[in-house]
Structures are given as C-alpha cells and as structure tokens.
Image (tube, rainbow, N blue to C red):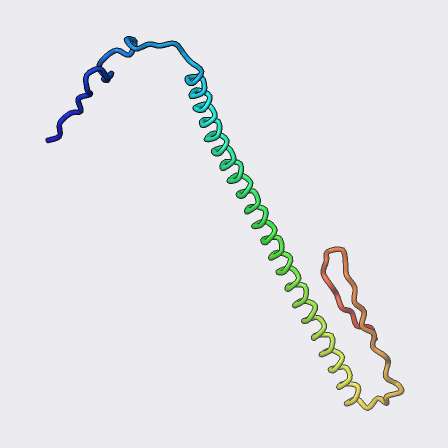
Length: 134
C-alpha cells in the first residue's frame, strides 16, 4: 500500500488556504503571465495553420479529381468519335470496292467510269458524316 505524500512543515498543502501566503505582483509575475499568453497564442496559431492547410489540401485534391474526371470524359469522347469515324471510313471504302467490282463485272470501260468524291461534313450535332458522290 502506498503512503500519501505529506509535505514538510512550512510548505503549503492542497487543504490549506492559499490566501495565507499572498504577496504583491512583481515584474517576474507579469513576465510569467506574458509567457503563458504567448504560449497560448502560439498553440492557437498552430491549430489555425493546421486547419487552414487541411482546408486548402482538400480543395486542391477535389480540383485535381475534377480535372482528372474531365480529362477522362474528353478521352472517352475522342475514342467514341474516332471509332465512329473509322467505321464510317471503312464502310465508305467497302462501298467503293463494291462499286468498282460491279463496274468491272458489268463490262464498262475505264473511260466511261465516273470519278468518286468523298466528302466529309460535320453537322451541328457534332456527328461526322462521310458522303460519297458519284
């Protein structure tokens, strides 16, 4: 069992009133108060800087995520447009080959064949159309 601490005679214990040893404030007491205030100010500044940095880092992280999402959306759109354009070009060349094959089988001479013109247009909806004129 632990013994309770008994202060030596003449020292102030917790149960005794502190008013018995009152003394006037001296310059060191004012200095100690100023140091306590400064310490509290420094701790509060540290807390506020941590809070501000956390806020800024969250905003930056959110902005980076939005930018990445936007870039991914643009890449997906470009992939869709390029695949659509590739399929249209492939279809156009297949149509040209079919017409050439039909013309060769029908017996038309080369001088009588008409030239084919491929025209690429973009309408207001953003779709790309390839038209073949004969």
